[in-house]
Image 1: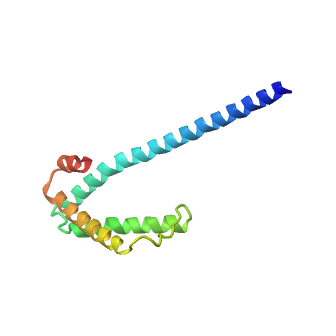
Image 2: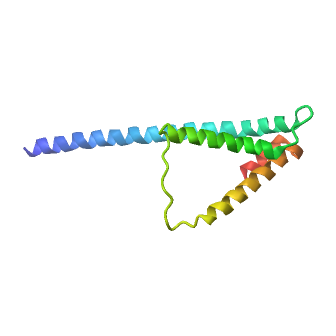
Image 3: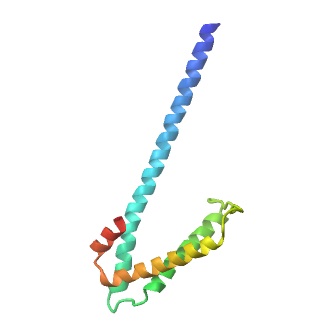
Length: 132
């Protein structure tokens, strides 16, 4: 009887180990996909922004380009939440909500001023700055 218990334990252990390996591989492939998308999209955004700012007469409104990017983010986030792909968690009571105002204001300033760089710097230099 002890032999059956040992063989059952070994079979269960082998199955859980196999499941763990499959789960780790799935997470690794997901991470690889996200990294590939990030490393493809980031230079793409730099090139598109540079084309918008410098092509022909140039588009002299970097704040508007930044606002378009934020608008696209809001639209995509809204769609993901309402389709159930992403959920929203409530904010903890201990969080001071005025912190969000400061973070939002500084992020908006950073995005807007960052768009001005496309008017004066080369693509290579902008990529170097963003990699830091």
